[in-house]
Length: 381
Image 1 (cartoon, one colour):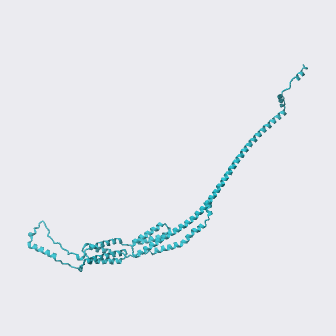
Image 2 (cartoon, rainbow, N blue to C red; image 1 turned 135 degrees about the vertical axis):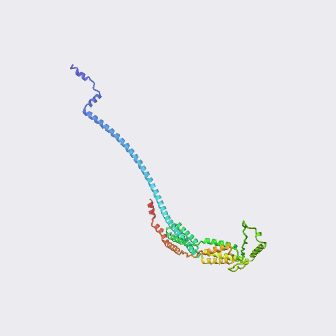
Image 3 (cartoon, rainbow, N blue to C red; image 1 turned 180 degrees about the horizontal axis):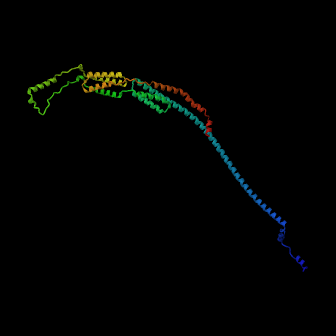
């Protein structure tokens, strides 16, 4: 049996490759080398994969950077174009603002010129109106018309709204109060009464046309117990009474305290009435002119004509005489105030306004020169 063992060993086939590999792997050195190779291979693959990913990320980032650079260049070009447009518009606005400033200065100067000319025109109108009112007050004494004129002047000054015209308004209001305080006569009422007398002159009876006053014949009163007249008196007594009554009507005895009025021809009657009318018209004119002396003198002559040539026993004549006498008592001669102080103040105010005119006209020019055009443009930006 011992001789057969070598033969058996020689006759066995060699082990396969995988067995040899397994046998080799069972060695520690080979196993470590194999593991090292496997680790290196895996690391190489991992590194390659990461490099590929980094390349892709880098390419992507570079593409995005290029796109952003292109967009930035586009935006920069647009901003530059917009800046150029804004610069051009700013220049146009500066030019327009400079032109607007010059126009504003021109308008201010024109407004001041118009305001100054308006004030001068208002003062000229007020001066002329006050001068006319003063002349009318001194010549005619028509206080009502002067009051109306002064009130119109005060309203004209109030419409201007100028505070510097208040002193003139105070003077005018003072004159208005002084004129209202005067004890004025009722000129329109007196004029209407004179007009009524003038209208009644043509119908006034004359003195030489007066008739004798006849006393009525007294008749016996009839009583309840009276008897008939024929039974109480005889026929002779009745005839005598009637005859005596007729004789009393034929003869009249009067006491004459003034001379008999002269007989007047129709033409003289016409001129008498016209002269009386003229006297009354003159009295009315003197009334309107506030001439008290002429007014009373004309009324005195009119009363004399009425008393001498007209029948004063008639009611129209007596009423006219009483009315003229009452009208003669009206007081027309008053000491009227003058408007010289107000007129002088208005003229002094005009002189002061003329002195201020050069300085006022020079102020807009100096203000325009002190404002440069570029300053306004910079401020607007």
